[in-house]
Length: 136
Image (cartoon, rainbow, N blue to C red):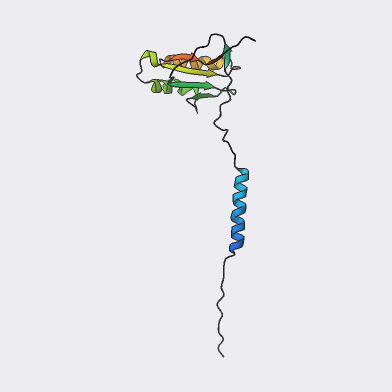
């Protein structure tokens, strides 16, 4: 006697796949940051009287609250600072070799003096960024 074999139809459960996809989307939306704070510099300028505006700086060096040094927004070590500043300044005339130095108001001199030395080695002119102190 010969038996007829039945073919089994296997269909994937599309309903549960949609549920899984929806749950994954929700999971990543909940865990996603709305703003990337990894590149945000925490810097408060020093205050002084008689502050003047600067025009078109080519190079910007920032020292944040944690004494990390940033060259044009990218973190950099002090050893490579003079070389990078020299490259950025290139063959510009002396009137256009200004380097903006933004130092957090609580930074010690031992931190920013090597930066000023590196800028002078590169042939740049240091311009400090400060807030104008208003009399109260």
